[in-house]
Image 1 (cartoon, rainbow, N blue to C red):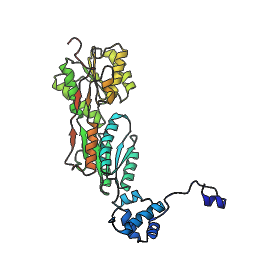
Image 2 (spheres, one colour):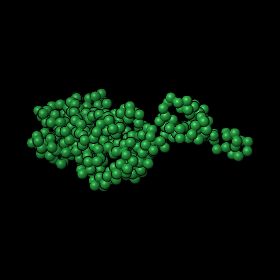
Image 3 (cartoon, rainbow, N blue to C red):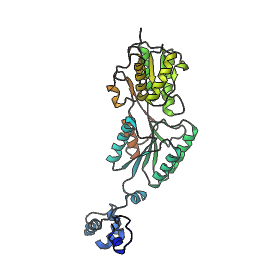
Image 4 (cartoon, rainbow, N blue to C red):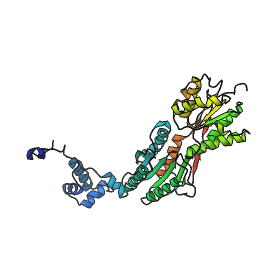
Length: 360
């Protein structure tokens, strides 16, 4: 309880706030001007003068805390790098965040993780707040809509951040056409799926289904494009009836597979947009008495840490999430000049969930 409140009989509002001393109090106790105290506490003092030591001692005695936010807004002190995504779940986001955070902290920047839950209004408010706080950079992470509305929104974000010397960096999303000022660090979605299909074709598969979304979002469109391109290159007609539309949920993939197999029992391989979908497909096949990979092969995308330990281990595309985060972080702190869109290579990893087509 507050001592003064208790003496006066007034209701207590909790403990007294700490750090009430201001710059003038520190200067007075140290016997220097407020300008001198400000320079010392901002780290711009020489460190040799006796007054320097007195200011630091006075600040310590009074419990004076430097206002880091105010300093960053004046272009001094530590600035922040914000990692902004629709949701903060799964190992893919964790790996990317880890890469960016390692660079930010090594350069003495603060690292913030923020979520928007896919709400454009929340996203816009967050960009406003980060601009007000003079963030050094905003890493906008993950798949985004492919429409012009997002492009216009991103352009507005970039312009607002640029006014305070900050940069907008897209991570895991291709560059926006006609907006070279917005950095883009992506990985090869198309080539990764192409490699997965090539692997299946080489093992004799011809009836190859695709499971996932095919449009509206950048990741969906790119991965589906990889499937179509590889199928056509192999001389296999793309059959729209073999495309199963599902969101990125294991249980939803399981449900759709049961319905799909009733009409398409000749399918011998499933290319899944993500590992999460691949797990659902594998479980549904097992429940239907289909052996993986003896009767049907399953491949995923993302190479989640558990993919190698599933039964059977999952063939999948390894995406360089950590490396994307590292490169975005280096650009954000000014350690690496941005010279145009970057697409890092993905790698198909063949494990035990894929093999020769039955009868091939």
